[in-house]
Amino acid sequence: MHRNRRAGSTKSSSTTFIIEDDMVCICRCGFEAETIVCWFDENAGRRLYVCCREKYGDGCGWKAWKDPKMSEHAKHVICRLLRRINSLEEKIANDKKIAQELRDREKKF
Image (cartoon, rainbow, N blue to C red; front, side):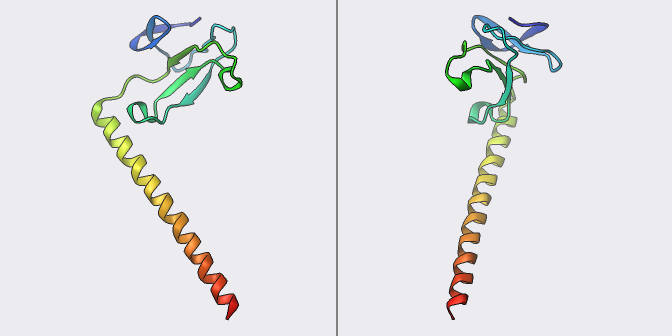
């Protein structure tokens, strides 16, 4: 079930639509849907409504996009930035590990 839907670019069941920002979405189970953020390359950063019972493994499978589809350029930029962030986070974690090893060595001397 949906309230106030408009034509869009995403499929949910057999209907294509995007949900307006201020709408409450009710899934086929009759519960208010949750909003999650997709982090797969094709839709990175795009918000999605899902059945709130999916996380327990007994949901109805209902889903609908909250955000419109992004342009190819936007997808490319977001994916590139995410890769850069991941790389920097790995470098920081590695640098912290090295710094801790150096502190541990200093304590021995």
